[in-house]
Amino acid sequence: MAVVASLTLGLVSTACSPDQNWREVTFERTALKAQLPCKPDRTSRTVPLGGMSVDLQVAGCESGSAIVAVMTAPLQSGADANAVMASWQKATLDNARIAQPLATNPQVWHRPGQLPLASSIRIQAQGLRASGEPVTMDAVWGAMPDGDRVRLVHAVVYDRKIPPEMANTLFDGIKP
Image (cartoon, rainbow, N blue to C red):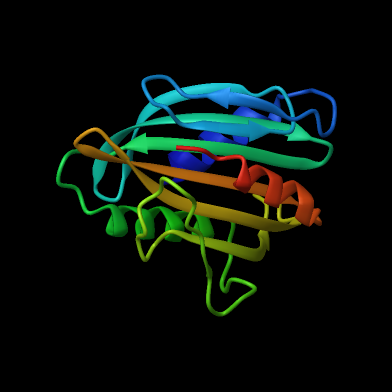
């Protein structure tokens, strides 16, 4: 999971674009669409996720001081999407050195066209960057049908203070 976090932070650390210039992005071999507030850099790699290898696609950028990313991965047919998403959530929180999300009960995050899984949630939390600086994270995880498989999606904003409209626009802009 450190690979996923490194990909995200490495991808967006070199991005340079105007603040809040929202645009639609698509992902190869899927109908998934998202809105990002800046021109994204992209990468794709095979990474370990939840005990299996997945083909992860990442689109991310910097908007002002915020790091914004959307990631997606198709699961193998028959894979336990809830377990894989729970593993992804734990790895994300561990990587940001987050001991406890800000809300004791994460918010349910279900959008039209997504599967109503228990692990489809939104988490807001305080953590630390690799440099030791404090950071706030606002993140969602969800799943959608993708042929005979399930496709996972994860979107995240990292910043000192996250404007609610930025995170809400990012998360509401994800369409299966």
